[in-house]
Image: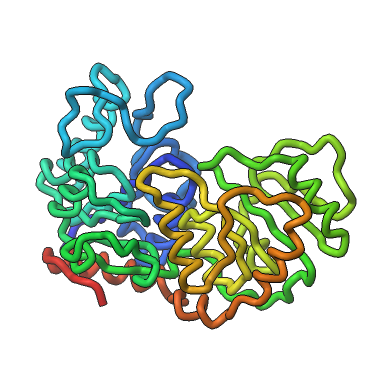
Length: 352
């Protein structure tokens, strides 16, 4: 009998946790153990291992880099004399020794992938969007039994090496969202901000709403309060069931993170995409591919209020068939089955 599958969940944003939950819930109960920082009370009824925080104590935005001059090229983040990192390494390797996992899914951390391999555990590395051809990523890809990418192959960065792409299993549809049976809110614009970004400017949102009085604007996620809020603007704050809001919206505005993009594709919503700065141009790369395929209207920065009606008209003209092509309705179950098969066979399974 194969051992459990560990699923490491990175703590930046919430997309990694949501993806892990979707996959683990599609498998027989208890097969996956979620591993990461701050998971207590956030894994529903799934087993988890909560690790100490590995972030530095200053106020810099966490970008997965430590600016250490003597860090090996095969690592992204390895600060010295950090008690949290010592604790999490000891706890993870103790869990591996005790539970003898058949596989470790790493979403995402080069260091966790290397540690699991050193602890004699095969890895599946989750490769996100962007041009990830630096030495550390390439070594993590090389050491993995297989690479899993949570998007359609047509959204992949064209600059990725051929051998990395050949080793990749593309798994679109890793979202709890589905085509809504509820009617869409006609003339409703939903603006989405995630935990991983800087949040929204309430006054800019108010100006956009005033410039389009025939539309209802709903905003979810962290947003500053506007100095004056028009009647057609509703700021809802953090919403746990964001997928329902996305499914019912006439049009969605947001960044190019995997969670939001997958939800938009799953629900077939029209999309105006504003990619945010991320390491390895993750969101910019994905946004460029969405624009090239005609799946989204992509803009580099928040527009002037007077530009919104034209942008909304352009988004409404998008062909919904493109999103259908990029979606896998049963993506979470297919990914779970693939990982269970990989764990059983102990050998690579390339993309289907």
